Length: 246
Image (tube, rainbow, N blue to C red; front, side):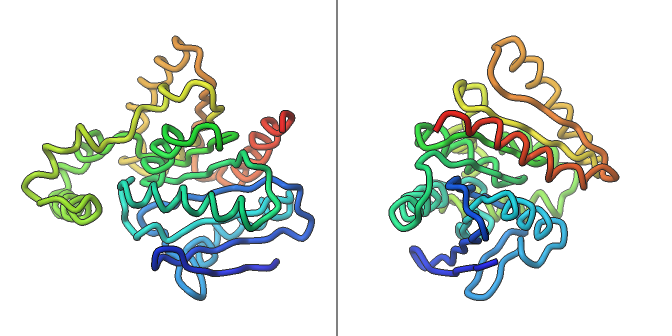
């Protein structure tokens, strides 16, 4: 499969071309460990992610993603670069102008903000073990003091704010709740890997009830790690179900 690496705003980006393109693109927004450099990426080095990439390419998707300033936590500059990457792809590649998004963990914060700003460009969204709220994520990390302090420092760098002020500013910088984007189909896949994932599922359960009451097109799938291999087919089936209208 052909791969091309290039730079935008000093950040490395990568495109994965399928052998038989069907005209639809997927923007991936990665989690905390995500990276892209001039040679490789986390999604190429991680066995599970690489398997998903191959499944998506075999299905005919053109896949693209960016380093997005590393641990960006949904920062303004990361969202702007994601939008610039989308514009670059639409200008330079033969793709349908409405793309899919697959976001994992921290990447969900940038994805939700991007949806809020460019919803006409988005066809559907898949969120894998998403962090849907920075405030809620900080609460979960409070018991792990080392990780909590590390997270606060990362937020301070990402949002270019003082460490002492960043907690107070969270209300302004948090991602919009998914229910505000009512016309875009969304699938949330939550893999119950550890106690932290189970704690995160409590918030997801509450949101699920709200989404059902609001009748928004958001579905939730809980998965145990042993069934993880089924995720690729579930994602592809979901994406294709929202390609009937070009």
